[in-house]
Image 1 (spheres, helix red, strand yellow):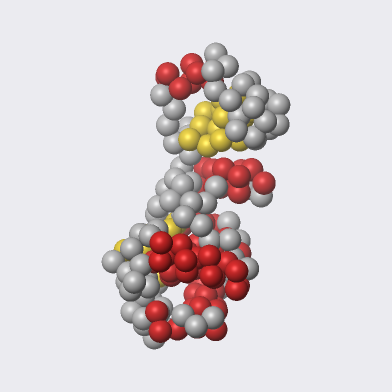
Image 2 (cartoon, one colour):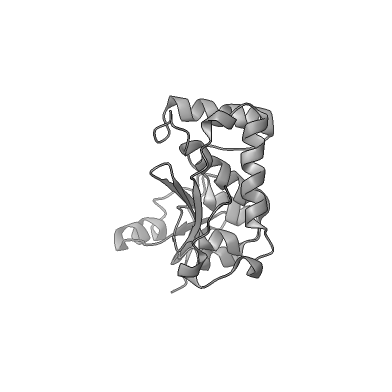
Length: 189
C-alpha cells in the first residue's frame, strides 16, 4: 500500500524538498523486512508532516500514523529523517508499547544490523550545534540559546524562567560538556 501524506494541511508539497519522502519511507520498510521484521509491519501506517515545534522530532499515534516535524523536512537531511522514521516505525510494531524493553530490543537490533543510531531520546542540542543548523533553531521554535563561553556548546530552550536566567548569570549552572559556569544568553524572539 502506498503511503498517504497529509501535506495539504501545511500547504507544502513534496517536490519543495530535495528529499524523496516516498522513497525514504519505502527504504526503511524494506530494510526492516530484510532483517526479518516484515511480519511486524502492517500496511496501514500513514506518514504525515506535522507542524510540531520544539524537541519532538516525530511521533507515532495509535500505531497507525507517524508524524514527522515539518522543520525536520526543512533540514533536507535524509540520514536524520530515516533515523526518526525508523524510530517511529518500531513504535508501530504490535508488541511494543512506548519505549518498553521490547521496543529497546528492536532498536538495538536495528542499530546493530543496519547501522542506525536509534535511541529513546535524541540529543537535538548536540545535532544542531555539530551540524551548523543554527537556522533550525528558529524552525523548531526555540526562543533562547544559552552558549558556554569556554567551549561554545549551545543549549536551546523554548522558555527560560527568570530564576533560571539568574542561575546562568550568577554562574550557578555548569556546562555538561566542559564544566564551565560562564554563559551568554541570546533571545531570538
